[in-house]
Length: 174
Image (tube, rainbow, N blue to C red):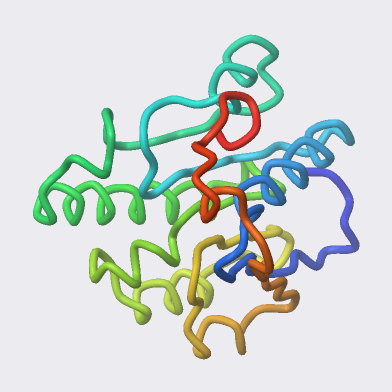
């Protein structure tokens, strides 16, 4: 593990604005560039997008999705099973001693959709080794989560092209 003064912080990137996953990816790239070992674990996502292509080509770290296919087309039962499996996998990786930084992308969305519980996430935070830096992303982070975090960034949507009819663009939104 890379020296970080023995203190890994908990980050939360939340809010209704664009950029939560993008910020987490930027942090993961910076950490990998400094020789840190990174686990980037996604809870609820659609099909493969630009970051998956980049990671497969350049191998700075791995992006792990337990389920395959478009999450937006799955039943709640299937999503719940995948979210529980993803949470279990994330817990193993956090405790493994192999990673300096672990990103749990859209874990907050999994809570908000009732696929995992706030208590499960709080237990995960309780078990985090002191040196592991941990990032949680997703809209509408609960106060129980933000109070436990060391850093909370809220992405605020002031203006977004989607509201004007511009569709998601390859390489920009996905």
